[in-house]
Amino acid sequence: MTTAHELALTLQRLGYLLREMEWNQASKSGISPLQRQILSFIRAFPTRARASYLTRYLGLKKPTISLALKQLEQKGLIRRQVDPSNRRSYIIHLTPAGEKLSDWLELGTLEQWLAEMPPETQENLKSSLYALMSHLTRHQAAAEIYLCDTCRWFISSSHYCEAQGKYLEPKDMRLICPTHSLLNNP
Image 1 (cartoon, rainbow, N blue to C red):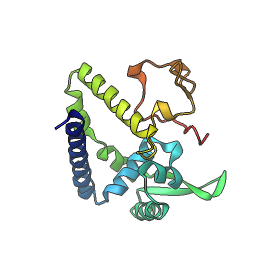
Image 2 (cartoon, rainbow, N blue to C red):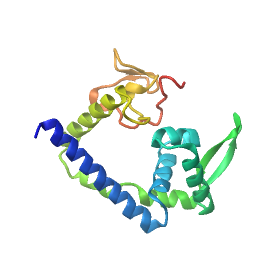
Image 3 (tube, rainbow, N blue to C red):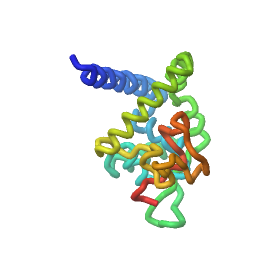
């Protein structure tokens, strides 16, 4: 077995384990795993809380997202507000109940386990995951990923981030950036 094959199998297994954690957590709270992902996205990216961003981020079709949003609204976890800049679009907000649930839904256990690893191991893992996600993005094998490499604010030749107004060291490169703006979508 090659190292690449072993890594692929390991990442696939890790994906299954993380998905299982999400399913278990979502089912305990009375929502679906997709609804859990939507709440997490809204919490992480409140300025992008629109169906169009959700479809790109989650790699799903708009009707699937629309149905999940309708269900979350019926459960009192989100509210939709007409976007003043585009009357056909809605800005999505967490309600107080949605905020409380999204606090509970965060991957706290996984984060705690990662925090138990030595800082150097955490940084190496982050760097490796960044490289993998960047590679997948370059080969268009991944849905929208908020990496520095795919952001219009990032000048790759100098590693300068215009959004943050500073040069980034490799350890400062973000796997998920709240100020990310797609190169082809200013």
